[in-house]
Image 1 (cartoon, rainbow, N blue to C red):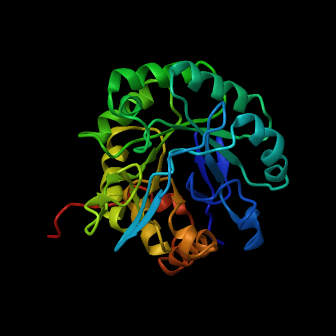
Image 2 (image 1 turned 90 degrees about the vertical axis):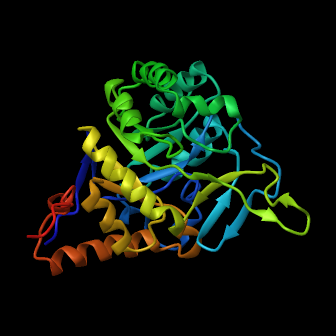
Length: 307
């Protein structure tokens, strides 16, 4: 019997495969394809205190190796989530991680307060790294001093496990992870999408109405694996890896680089049962390798030259 259970701070997961925020809605549509109890955790679409309409369309365009999106954090708002979506999610024996954001520190604090008091939310994932918000917002995830202020303020607000989702659009992601750790984060998510652009060559204009968007999918996986490895070396708190995971083999790269758990994002749009297939593939790999515990391969990467 292979042990797939892992711990993210005080949050215990029966397996290390979760969904990436923004790609799984609130779970209802995917429940038609598989039992959500098979997931390690459900990470819901990013939530704000008040509903958001998001960016104008077009907001999604495919690229040869991934998807570029500029949804702009459209969501139903925390009140509607608690009233209309959380009762459905409470039916499952799978932890719910609420991804949330704000435009100001006070909005972050208020969002964390309301989600923590809801009941049925088991952890918070703090989004300070969406590339599709206005320029001034970006400092939450790219300026260490601003990040320190917002993470510290939220930490004082909630006793739930706090996960900080880091931006890859920085020069030193290990430094940003250390700031999150020092401010009381229980874990970090690595990585959010990378800023990109697709151009309509006939119109000489960006395809997306927002001009730029966040690139996800296989194209960013090698970057994400590298950043997980850098963060794993920089902090002692658990790392949740994500970015272009399509198969179990992809996921295993993240564990070996240092991830304690992984999140599946763009793959959900192509194959709705991808998280379950990835979980099963991880277990099969461990059996083939004669290993009994997923935790045995976390951070097992060796870069010492063979002699």
